[in-house]
Length: 90
View 1 (cartoon, rainbow, N blue to C red):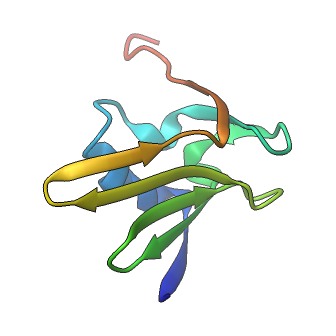
View 2: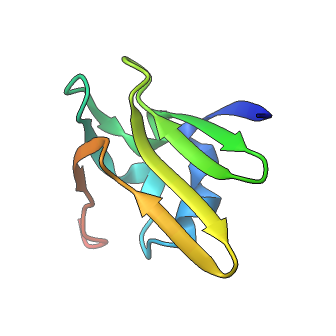
């Protein structure tokens, strides 16, 4: 498997195809260790031909798994306890 480690901002493109908000500014809480931070601070692995994996920088727990195949997105958010987005108005 050919994986490339990037910072959380690299998830903006793939996750932007699924979510209608700026995903890198969303706040998450890791299901594995309880760390709370912005998704832009997480670690992202682009696995060529398979998809995107967003991992917690503290415990390496998989927060988000995203695959795109045959015109469909498959999204697994089991690694996130919650995902919070502020309204555009603040």
